[in-house]
Each structure stands twice: as structure tokens, then as C-alpha cells.
Length: 200
Image (cartoon, rainbow, N blue to C red; front, side, top):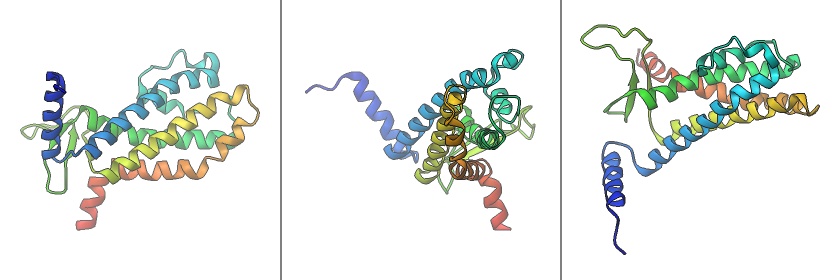
């Protein structure tokens, strides 16, 4: 069967990615992370509207601002469930920096594997925004995917609190998962600093 031109070019590009340290398994995971993050981001705003009713009208719809709102107790969640929701927000803040570095950062070849750097300084001049990076391999991306999936589940369950009396308990039952997501996301965001600390 004849291969179409777009398929041929796509295969060539994927081969180039593999040569740069992005084998199919890594590319697949980057795609999965982007997909799940999008699901989380899309559902977060509507969940916050349900939980806060009209109190979200003055809040920016930028994802970073919406994530900050997750820590606010001005919603319908009981205290224990709100703690889980707020901790999910802390995990989301770290994972957002990791995800943004991949999607918006500069690809830098490195001996330990591909690295993305977002907002790097140029010619010694610091960037106006904070610089952050993202190391890439299958294990690190698996951590990111797991964390993003937990965050998405929390957002979906939290939306049900108004209509389902059992939803708050289901949210509280995710405490250990959210703790894992927060730990993983923190490690992903600060991996360069952790690696430099271990060298000293």
C-alpha cells in the first residue's frame, strides 16, 4: 500500500525525535500528559463555578489563578474535603510549571537526557519571568501523567459535592493519592535543584 506524503513526513520527524532522545514511548507520554492536563484545565473552571457559585466572577480565568483559588475555603466543600482539594491545587501548581516548560520551553540537549528550559536568561540578562525546567524520560513522564490523572479525578469528584452527599467522602478518600501527586509534582518541578544538591 502506498504511503501518503504526510505519513512519510510524520515518520521521518518521529525518527528525528528518537535520535534527539525522544523515542516513541517518550513522545507518547508527552502526548498523554498534554491530553490529561487539558482535561484537568477544562474541568477546573466549571468545578470552581459549581463550588463557589457567583464568587468566581472576579477571578481571572488564567489557569494559574484558577489553581490558586483551589486553596480558598470559600466553597461548598467540608473542611476535610477542602484540605484534599487545596493540596491538589499545590500539586497542580508544581505540575503546571513542569508541563509549561515542556510545552513552551526551549529544548536543550543534555548528557542525562533531553531537558526543556522555559524563560532562560540570554547573554547574561535574566528573563522577566521565572525560569524553570523539565527533565524528560519515561519514568518522570509516568510520574507527571499519574499526578495529572489524580488532579483530574479530584476536580470531577469535587464538582459532584452539591448534588451527591457521598462525593465529599470520596474526595477525602483520595488523600493518599493526592499526597503522592503532590510529592511527584514537587520532585518534577525541582529536579534540577535536587540533582545539584546531591552533587554538593
